[in-house]
Length: 363
Image 1: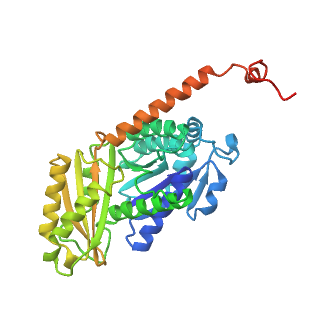
Image 2 (image 1 turned 90 degrees about the vertical axis):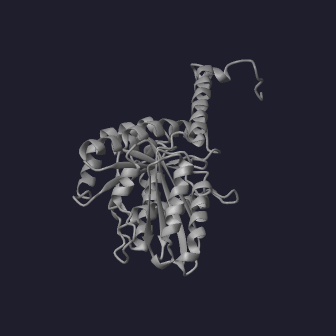
Image 3 (image 1 turned 90 degrees about the horizontal axis):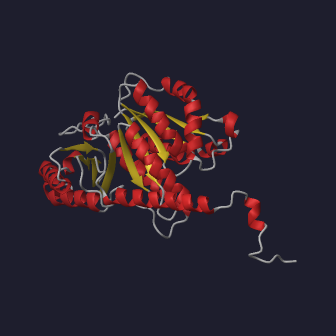
């Protein structure tokens, strides 16, 4: 799928960089161009992509401090700059646009839905969101931001591919190591999805191309990606069970939204050397996904790449029924309620806190 990426905010810029780097490393040439947009100039220091600083007249390059309402306003005010920067990157061969962002911060969670809305108005190609949920241990502000952004971005984009920040972070990792690992995992999964059908080296027996991805995401709403890989035998006949078990692992343990198995539609991609891919194994894997998702719209195919391993990638469309989504939205709503109660109980004049007799001063 020939794609243009636009990363909004700090997390969006870093993830867009990881996606573009993976695509270049694998030689897929699926990512045709990329742009990073932010309100904080310091966040551009580690971004090798083309960048665009917005909101300079309001925040002077210092970011929005987690205020996603301000992030949305700045994007709305500076939309003409962003759309102008993207217009030269989106060509007749572009098959989709991905708006990439972290959903818990300020610039990304606020700006991404605004940008996605305008892009869908202007371009007659799919505009997808790629959003990362904050971890369960991150603060209430991030949960509230993400809940509001998720609802809006899922509505404004043609589909929202959602990543749970807790899905691939190991407990022993530092914060920076954790985010780097998450970006690497996302880049591998999304990169293979976009690269399917774009590699000029090999021709698949059962072609997976951009139309398969678009049709899988046609129902809109929230989507997820599952992935797993394992060493494979040289003889395809010996890999029937390898393919089916790897597909089960991809769905049940390697998903971007753990526990999301019921879906409106699905796409199963088996990647590896053509000689190692069993057609019977691919069909058995597809039928298993059909049963597990309770969907009759399950597509499948192979993606030939040079590797002694076989990988299974599963794209699920319409996973709003996921318990993970319901739990997250409940947590976001609770955080919003608690924040409102704290604000209600706070004195109108903060100085009153220091002008009562409830606590003696030092002298």
